[in-house]
Image (cartoon, rainbow, N blue to C red; front, side):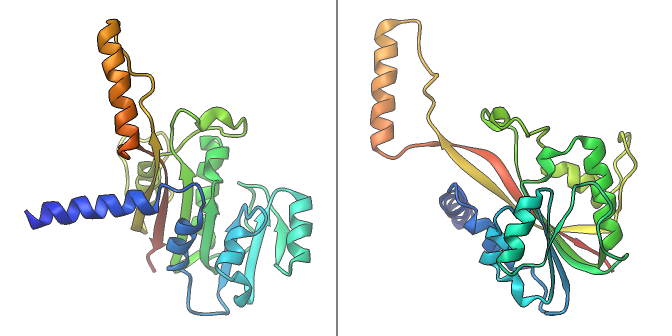
Length: 236
């Protein structure tokens, strides 16, 4: 019985922590896997205004690099004191083979068609050293995923498991690697109201709507998984 209660408590805590629109809790998760060596090459792809880099103090890594497709963003990041450079995935990453200790990707992969994502995974595998970490944060398919015109395709966690950690039979592409292990997978949650529920019977419909109002006031919510952060480590 205690095991069941502990599981419920864990699920409750996860929904409470990871159902916020802000990315801070996921940045904290990613921060736990940053290397101790301040000379290590640490990379943030698609840094935006530098939220992750600021949150995790990437400037303390002498060889940090922020890569972004937008030249204006690169200029702004440079003015803020970051080592920023123009980059468009899946181009060749500007690093030597097996030289990078850490790569952070926040809301990048969903903008790539699968052919480009496949090439990008190969590039990351090329530059990551043994023991290197990849942190991927991305949305899943939910009813607002395609509200953003730049969203090409949602990728479930199993995609990265199949193509980086083990060989998948009958896959459309051969595995990029089988040398990675998954260190952590944390889903993001969103509370939604089942407002589409109703009945063709008027009295039943009124009762359902009344119950929905009561449920809302009592704090009842339906939670869906609408994204995740995954941490993968490359074996030496």
